[in-house]
Image (tube, rainbow, N blue to C red):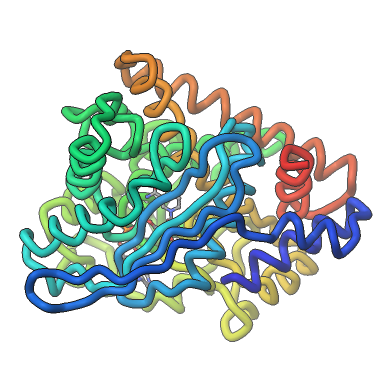
Length: 400
Ligand code: NAD
């Protein structure tokens, strides 16, 4: 993933006529915090916080708990955050954190101890005006509440602006849970408008029906009657129904703790995740993992559009191949920026002691997202580059 991030930056920088020194400056990381967290049960976990750039404002980025977290992944994600906040015009920088742990192996006490100790180690380097972490894969508002509480105990800060993605009771923003999926729907709709395709019927498939994928589909179900979800997957299996799956039913099933393997409905058959990537759909929404479309499966893609809701789900090699085939890839640093946009709105609410209505938050999200896609499309036309290059060009301009 680090390679994909570097390649995307280098490709855009080349089109702007920047030299290797300038590329190095864009890629170089400001600070890395690498440490171990030892729990009372005797187990030790490697932990990271990478602060890539604070040129535009405090570092901003999630904390991931996953057994495969490593420093290169955290570096790549931190760099992507700086380019994401810059591409959508937020006054924030980019950072990322992670702990190499499988949280399923921890009980609640261990999880709380791990979360609090992460903050105890990092507290001199983070805070409302320095670095504002948030949830990411396997971290949730409950974990963030422990973290913000620990930060407040140590520093006395009472604003709650040290972390975003808190529960609403603890100062979290209304609309944050749906923000990334909802932002993706706005981004795709705005792009289709530019392409003169508004209002056309289209079919789509979603890889990864978690927080992001399920909200993408349920928001689209309400706002986009012409979009038909015909396939969706989670880590257990994929589901297919030519006449259309019902996003709200799938979401309810997942919320009740079910996996797609147990989902039954008339006309629904099961497919593999690889079948889903190669399915005949208009739009493929990738909302699971990095490198989901890669050199092994890129030849199977039939979709006309790919929406990168995960971070780096189309590898660099696959991107070049698909770009030549005129597959339109809506790039991650724009498509999935809804989450960080509403995180920014949460931070603003905390700093000013306000609490905004959900519709107020959603209106602001829509403004940021449509303006980011309008600017993206403008650069795509004026520079005659792919949308991925255009997104990075816009970010580089804001970072320079
Ligand atoms: P999540 O854990 O809620 O959901 C991930 C989903 O992907 C789950 O349904 C899981 O079963 C599925 N999955 C895992 N492996 C899979 C596989 N091999 N094939 C198909 N499905 C698989 O996570 P999320 O918060 O929805 O995040 C999804 C992606 O979006 C991540 O890459 C994350 O970094 C990125 N992202 C999330 C946010 C956010 O606000 N949550 C913001 C920006 C980017």
